[in-house]
Image 1 (cartoon, rainbow, N blue to C red):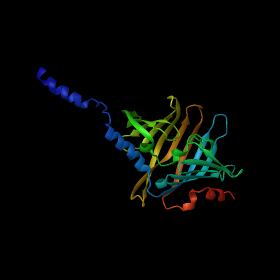
Image 2: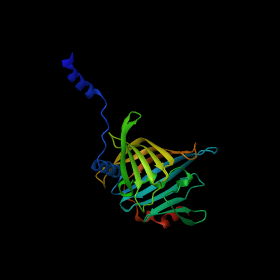
Image 3: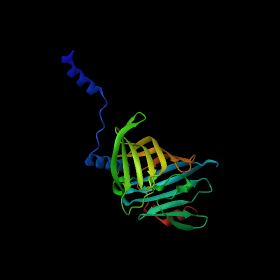
Image 4: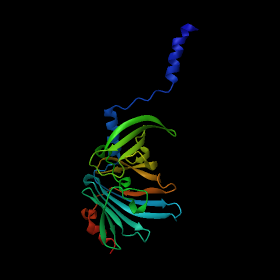
Length: 258
């Protein structure tokens, strides 16, 4: 019996759950860069999006908007088409400045990255190409289970002088697919501001990139400050063909409300 003990211990050790091994700096950097690259398109991007906003004590509102992106130049345009009260409103991001436009007044106003898009719980960068490696410093916090998924838990802290919607983020990244499954957005104080879930991801082949571009088909955002408020985002009808140059201008957005 005693002679069999070492062999038995080896078998039990093999069957026991392996202790999580910390991602070394090179591995962590590779994961973060991969998260960016998977959603990046070397050309342009157009998508029809729906946002259903739920606010405690108010009637649910469904917005329809078209999102235009030019990832190479970090340009972005949002054009609201529904409901009627919001049609013609929009946002333009160009040269790292975010502008909002209201056709009822004809005025443009500069906004920060913390702007609630259409008054919902979404932010501009929820619908943009991620630039995690460029904007944040990453730290590996651990490997764990999220439901049935084995995930990396990664903490991101904004780099000095960078304007982002939230200075601290925590990501739960599926180790098998490298899809983000859950995200927490925090204030500098550590207070939890939002929690987002990404239940469905899809990919589309890009001729300009010569590779697949991934995008979250569904995002569920929960406000952690105003409990009961949430926003469902659906991303549909992706088009990666080249866009006209004048789309990313104030004049183009103004022309849509005339």
